[in-house]
Image (tube, rainbow over all chains, first blue to last red; front, side):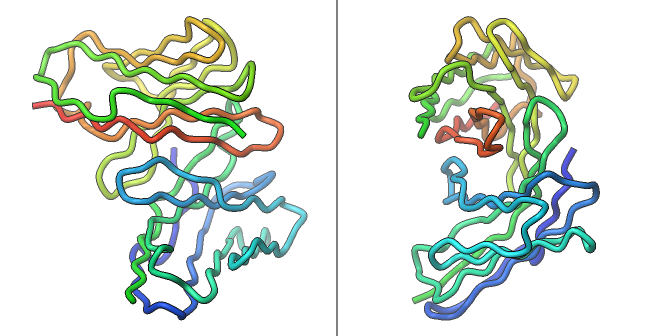
Length: 111
Length: 112
C-alpha cells in the first residue's frame, strides 16, 4: 500500500529558482526518505531523515520533517536543468524493511 | 555501495507467454531484495520481498512469482502473461539497518 503522497504532482520552474515538494504520510515512521528518478531509470536515494530529526541538509537539498503533522518537505535550492526528474518520498512499509512510495512529484527545470 | 544489475532492460511479450526478469546484486552480502512495479504516472507497488535464499514473501496476489536461488540473485517470473502485467519493474536491495534501498535501472515490459 502507498503511504506517502507528494504534492504537487507536477512542478515547473526556471533554472536558479528553488523547488519545494511536500509529502504527507498516514502512520508513525522511523524515518522518511527522498528518492529521485530520471525518466525511464531506477530510483536513486537522496536523503534520509529520522523521526527524531526536524531538518537535514545535503548540498543543495534541505529536508524538513514534522511528525506532528505527518509531513515532510524537500527543498532544492538554485535548481538546474539537470534536476529535472521525479521525486518520491518513502516511508517504512513495516515488512521486511521494504518502503512504501508515493506517486511522486514531477519536476521540470527549464534553462 | 551496492550495484544492482537488471536484465533485460526492455521486452515485448505476447499475452500468455512466459516471463523471466533477473536481478543480481554486487557489493554486499545477505541483502534484503525487492521487486517493485511502477505503472505509468504512478508510484511504486511492492510485489515481492526476500530476506534470504529461498525466502519469498508476496504482497500482492497476482500472476507473478519470485525466486531467490542464490544470495544475490532475485528472479521475477510468470507462466502466462496478462495485459495488466505491463509496466516498469524495478529490483531493489537493502540492508535493513540503514533503510536505504539501492535500485536497478529497471525492466520495461510491454504485453501485447
